[in-house]
Length: 438
Image 1 (tube, one colour):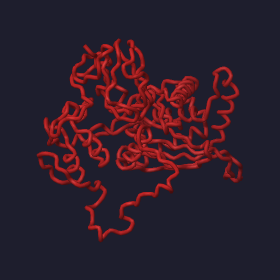
Image 2 (cartoon, one colour):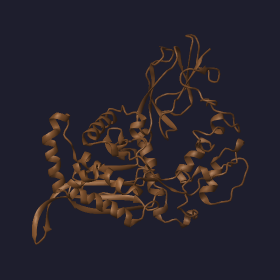
Image 3 (cartoon, one colour):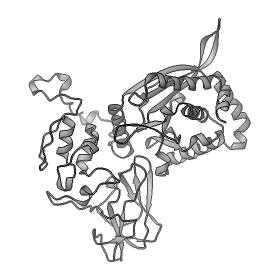
Image 4 (cartoon, helix red, strand yellow):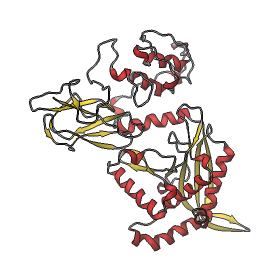
């Protein structure tokens, strides 16, 4: 009997992925452990192995298609078999109690994927899930009117516009304005700024990049962060002269022995880790139900990395337990994997605070977007010699601008300012770092 090959668990919070390519041809003979499919999540490009021997018969999935975790995408059987969904046994990957069929359901029929909750999430149709993200609606707060209580597009639509919920079949309705918008006015009353944007003439387009894969996820998450957090930015200029001197001393002393030169990011990360230990309310996130602020035990430091696939955030776990050498070596390994598209899902998940540095591009200050569900992010500008007052004299010092963006729902301004002030104090006098890291 044929065995099922389904999409496995791809990491924390990952519900779907995009097919990059099949690594073998349809009908190819495979052995247990062979990597046969390459998937792109918002976090990494992941090769997926099979856990059975036989001939792989690929379903109707090609490069660019989006597949869900636990979805059946191929079967493994005899040479003369074909892709036969719903008749196989577990073997490609561990099969859940209920699995999705890639074939389309008949009109009005609920598929098992729609009825079954996914990883503890509310039961909802794929269209409803997408609309919930677009409208900023929490599915946990929506009552499902569909078959078996699943949440439909109409349910999310009503919740997003504040209309009373009316149980019944999902109606065909025109697009509804987002919560931040008022009801649409008649066309005649619209101002030119409110009119729909005209399509760009083809001859004016140099290139087009679809909002899919990593780029699409970045677009959705940035919009979600901006529209759901109460963002506040604190900016300050700090004297980094002693910070620069310490880095030069460490570089000269340890670069050869360690195999890498300790960098500004490494030192700054340890300073921020120390600050998070002193001010644990910054190492926090909003609870899943949105009703509480959760302070976290572990400090998992996210470090933003520029890659060809887009902006990725590598995560150094339990950073409070790591010294400069261990932190720096792990950070460089994660960066290399990210830039080679070889990151494991856990490399890019579970962060509790993020640092993003644009100083190498001569950027002085900027306002980064909070990496949800974290409470804050620290933007780092370039280190630049400037004349500054020191006592009664004007001297040239190496100055750096820091921008702390935090979610005011979780942290108030004064506590956030104390956190940033501590970071500045240690940058100005790095010896304090070694006093706090006992």
